[in-house]
Length: 497
Image 1 (cartoon, rainbow, N blue to C red):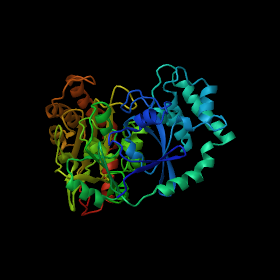
Image 2 (image 1 turned 60 degrees about the vertical axis):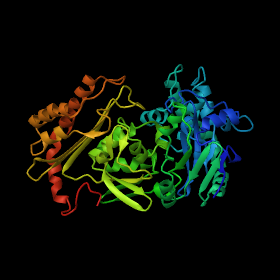
Image 3 (image 1 turned 90 degrees about the vertical axis):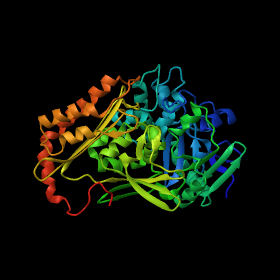
Image 4 (image 1 turned 45 degrees about the vertical axis):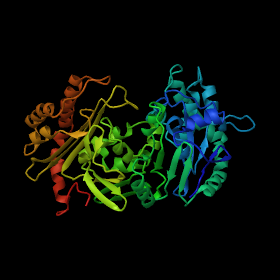
């Protein structure tokens, strides 16, 4: 077993032993390396002041990702190359195109947030990101500026692209060297490092992970750390033993087939986004509002399920889609309907030593309509007050044969609105059915009042979302019914089979 973490900071190789499992990349950069350009703002992955760029070699190409250093543990950088704002300017002092554009167009004022913006912009430029308003806003949604305003920063993003076209991106000349460096870091040997502060295990496949976790069920599983990171930064918790999920390469697998989409436990939202939008096109806007670019670059689809947050955006959407969760303990595997995984607040149908191996999201029947809606105080990167996802499947007689109405933010766990579903089944999708569902959904939940909304507000919103669903889909019901001709007989829908 390897006993050290290996990664590059800039062009310098670091091989570290004895580090704490809870040491964050941000603290290491600032306190151990003196790289104070990376700022500590919110320390919870919201403001983007700590954004750095992480490069990995994946599928024979380099992946350039902006991530929040405050909620990345240092050991998570194993096998990667990390760039901070200090790495952007050339050794002769020539600025990176993004830096030059920010100077020219006055994109900085107090400067505290500027390094994070610059790193997000450099990553977007490096990835060939689009330069329309929507693409730039999405790329910068995870960075907050409190004094300059966003207009000059958006203009600087476009200007940076022009400068890169004229002068070239400095990283173009580094590609070959970066590939060589990362190639030397690829390890088939798992890491299991004992330190004075705890134990760090980086299994290279799911079999190793399963055996390790079965023997050590009290260990903390960490995928993207976008939730677990806050246990350290906000709750000051220390970990006795952490086991990485994303280092298990076979859990990074996605498979698309006629029956649906398999998403392994290590697949991030960024990597899954295109496939999810293709599978659930009506949920496109909601999917793109899950977190920010930095969060989606780290957060995994299955981690969003596994933490069982009552306000997680993914679970209601996948429940409405009929997703099946795959669990594993050692060599034993089992499947549960996703809604059955959530038992109560803080309780899931998961045994000690058992972990989520993946989730299967079935192809939606052609005779169904699907929508998802997120209600929050801000449009981008905000926690939902209410999340609703709805699916209606119609029989040959034009009546509702199956209803799946899932909500987040309305109870201690993501949950289906069973009374509202019963009010719809067997009825035509008309205003009378809508009114019955709107009345019944009030019986399904007794929500709490908090800073995101009162109980009255949440109850009212759930009914209003059903009304919106009706307005958007009732006229298209006939299109769904025509889909009966293309449904394959004998295939069990929503089972993952």
